[in-house]
View 1 (cartoon, rainbow, N blue to C red):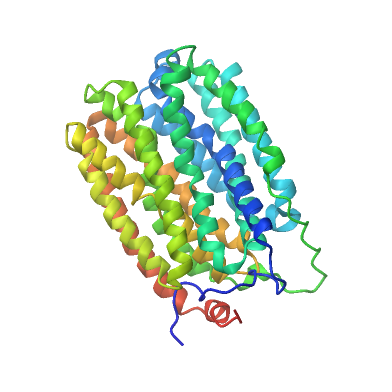
View 2 (spheres, rainbow, N blue to C red; view 1 turned 120 degrees about the horizontal axis):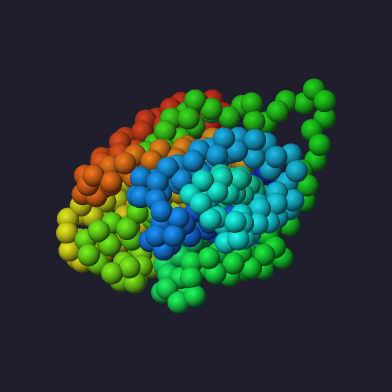
Length: 413
């Protein structure tokens, strides 16, 4: 048998033998996208509105990097406990908790963030919403979507990240530059509350009997940690793209509205790339992590182009960075869930912690470098993305050798 990064396509769910309806799969995908977007958008609002927020609160690009770094550091700390909570209480309760916490954090920014310190504290509290939203959505897709559609469903779900940046880019000229940046947070908080009826509605998992083996104990933990290191490097570089792109363009004397339009274009391309990548994953059957590594290599080229002045490098670099270099999370989560069908939320909590750690370290380092030179910062980010591709390939090799992975690959389809 040829061992790939995930099993061949099939029609059963990852945890059960009963066929799943297409209606339930569509509802699960819609709920996952809505929940993830509502949970993650606060940090992208801060990045997209940085020009207006920093003018009022008084902080530099390094200050923005520190704020985002602390947000993702809090998310990394919450990821593993959130994975346990999602596995224990199911997606219905935890997804709604994530959405509510996200909405409350945005309202708190609008009403209470009158200093840099207050802004940072509110962001750190709201980071738990991102962890709960991401992992509850992963569980919902693993339980509710047929196996032969899970690649597409994870691609659709991960399109929530560029969708969040798209909404941010659209909010700059329509709201922030007209009635003020605080109203952006109020409006988006209201939109987040509208997500609650769409959030996942999966059943609460059965209570594990005393003495029964914990399904999380048999996952390929060390191999997943290696993959998580690759996710750290790639997320660190890619998150800088969404957070610093507008400020970097303004530093080149490009007006904020034009920079926001470029960010919006990149976000649209990113949404399409994530959905298309998931659709192709369902048809490819294996070697998903190889594809992830290849997209990171191309994305590195895009980040390197951002070091050059002018509109053409800005547009091409953004499209390559978002459309290719930031298209991998759905395929990565798809592969991890396929290889850990008994505890998908717990397994993806490891790689998700890597993503959050990258979101912490990347903007922090990038912000410090950008204070001195944006071109240097983009070149360092490109190098980190190349390193991420290497770590993903090493993690793939370790996964292929793990007994639990081989067992998952041999499951009947």
